[in-house]
Length: 482
Image (spheres, rainbow, N blue to C red):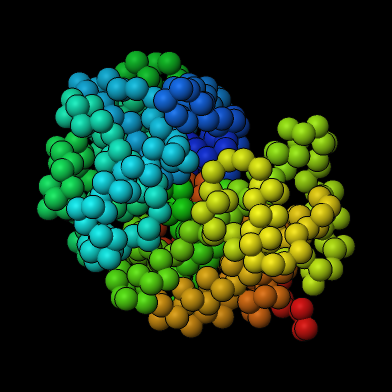
């Protein structure tokens, strides 16, 4: 029996899941017929604005993650391993193991000068041929190009957020490959660092660590870390799909040859799973991205702005003194006739930064000669309708570009709890939507660890079968005439 395995064959692992607005530590029980996740700690992730820009409070997140891991080990002393996932693209620069400043937030405006610097040397079409990534102004290569050259020259290591947490836990500096695929510096066809590209952009190659794949052991906890957590020497850190969407897609209970997925939270990641990158002119024109998945799969997807638009709208109203209860708001939105509210382009760049979303929606409507929403309920319904249309259109387009005959759409993550959004996506797509699991990212993290520890075995399909057997999704059928 593997270390940490119970009499049922299930074993315990712990996941650190860092999202763009909050973080969690989860204890999982994983076995042939068992997949359970218990959140033992939850903490906020609030960006910090300083005179030089917007940053992540990464030291605060690490401290909260350690506190959560202490709770995890108290709740399950037989935890065999720890896995860390987070959002993509952001990083910390180090010199001799010391962090050189607080990592920037991807929504910081400094990325604009990075885009200009990169495209001056290499246009996006050429970049796409190499890295297969859709244009997003905050991709890591643009952020690195925005760094002062003396700072980049002084740094000896750049670590993406989950890799930095892993380094602090183990002392091992590696870059997990699914997250590396979001940087723009990985060759899409070989899944190796593109040294020629880095040289062409004037970026120092030596700062990128050796790659590690999901399921590989990163290393044992540092003695001082193990002591602070009350962990035994056998507890190690295992690489998972450290890009949170890569972990989420592991736990989508789908048949990839006939389904699209939407990992819906702050962002809506809409796509299909394919065996190899799709670098066609159509994929480039549609701004689709090829990102690495677990077991060498490719996530062919497009970033849709996601629930960020709704959550930032609600935050704005709350700053104005309104008391907003989201379920009540969505209930009122469901009563609004969808024909009376505009469907706007949620991917318009104006909706990316924090700020007054209702004013921006109204400005978009004025520019397109349509009536803007007036009440809170109308704004919420307009946002839901616009997201549902974007999700439906993108899922169909992903299938066409990827050669997948999409018959079903799976929605996982927090958006799967939004019944109105799920139903309207089904209506607008004209195909069933299967919603859940909500905790897909955490479950995918736990599954990869559980397989590495020997608590479960088999292919990605067998892991998804376990998800389907233990976390049955909610089905939304399209309604005629809707």
